Length: 428
Image (tube, rainbow, N blue to C red; front, side, top):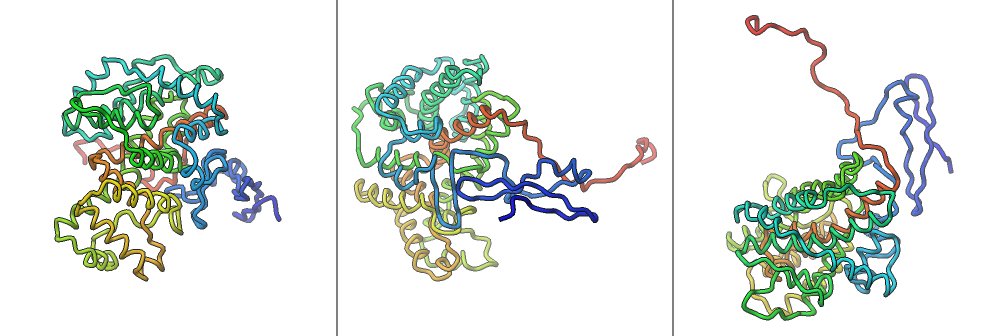
């Protein structure tokens, strides 16, 4: 097989090397394109055909429905690992042994205190503020309480920064939700596991003892694992490009949270629930809305079905569907919105129109259903996505900084006015 690609332009031929990944992906290395061709660039809106980096963190094959973290299948990790193990794996490259995992957890617990003055910042937000805006602001505000830049050449400095954000971020997540619900802020319990403690911080009522539900904790654990990384998506690319300017970890993460907020990215699971609420309000006729979804002249969009990357069934959706079924059965919830969700799922899996186009329910569809069943407010769904994606963002930022990647600076093709002479105001 050729080890180069040839571009013919303006009567000349230019050779560019091919880069081959460990899963046999091929890419044309065009970093010398402008210099050798005298200014020629490429244009690729949305970067659908452009690789921004080489990465050893996550492998994704959308055509085959494959997702692996550091070589481990998402199916096996969701079944056998817990979220903290996956955090360690993504960030440091290997699964931890018992001693490493225990030390990691202890180090995180030792950094879990958030400065009390952060509460003043939280108090400044009205209850009506969207939780994602609050979370982005609080994450950025952590910089004020940790002003020293991370020395990326120091393993200890890097580890300290990673542990601090893994410790404090769940606190900020829980405070964001409790603020919205008017509940007192909680710091959790060092005697609990990482995910169990997150659940307690979010849901512990001031007059009641916290009671663990294993099925609920396991489902939350799986959701966080499934969202932990997803290659070079919008928010991850944002974290990397912000970090490429040598902005700090917390600033880069805050930017990633803002990118995740959009309804075409992390906000999709919130959009799913809003769609379901609208269908219920209109009588709950799922067949009617499936017909609307197939009608190209109808503006209705069926949220939570299909995926921009996966051209087959989203492998994460297969896993989380089972957890959703277990949660709904265990909690015995009767909710017309969840009934509509199950009805849409059944219709889509049996309707030839959706089957032919591989428009299967995706992870956003099922995660929204589970969050709803757990009593998490709709506006908090994307915050939970951010909590899961945190280790992936950290791993991507760390990889980018350790490789000393150049500052991100895309090119453009200018389509504005050509040179014009200035006209004085009284002559216009």
